[in-house]
Image (cartoon, rainbow, N blue to C red; front, side):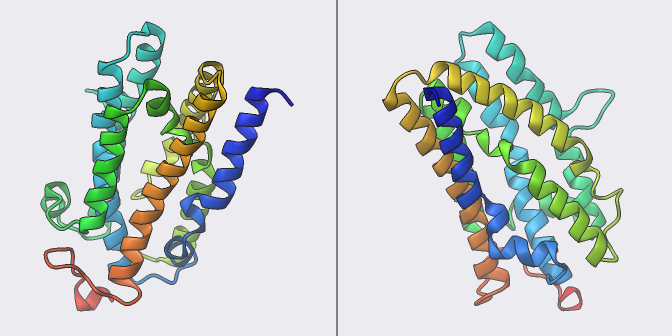
Length: 243
């Protein structure tokens, strides 16, 4: 096995052990054991992550001297922000929160976020802005594992929640091919540019960091809305009728 193959194997092992599809909150969500209020809390908090992705990607483009990399990375902005003809991922995520009965102004204002959600997402954005370009690109490698969680999510939510429809889950229709495209490019780029043992370790550490970001967001949801159920002041509180 050569160095680049060894690096890829190490990265895939991290995903197998640390990706947030393994988190107890996702297990509850995907097996129909969440109340509607818990599903709403997940969607509202995840919106902040979705909304900040274009800012993260724009910051990478803004300091990238490689024209080919900039051109490839611009696709990500359009995927999330959309264009005049097609809504992007952010708008499709709002279709989900609308369909779950959340007020759009409450969602887009982000005023009801869990504090840990805000801190985790901002840590991710600052990481991409401040670390090396290699680490910035490597931070998206969790997309290697996202098709699995998307498949589990769509199948489980459609099977178990009668208020969830294919239409309000339309965000997830486009993500598997987009994520596969983006992950393939980023993995190839990282394998090409991480030439030294130190650089390869930086890539590994970056993927661990990104998995920790996503895991910590799930921890916050579980702590606030499952066990022990301590919702921080100012955060979203489900209505009693929503469970």
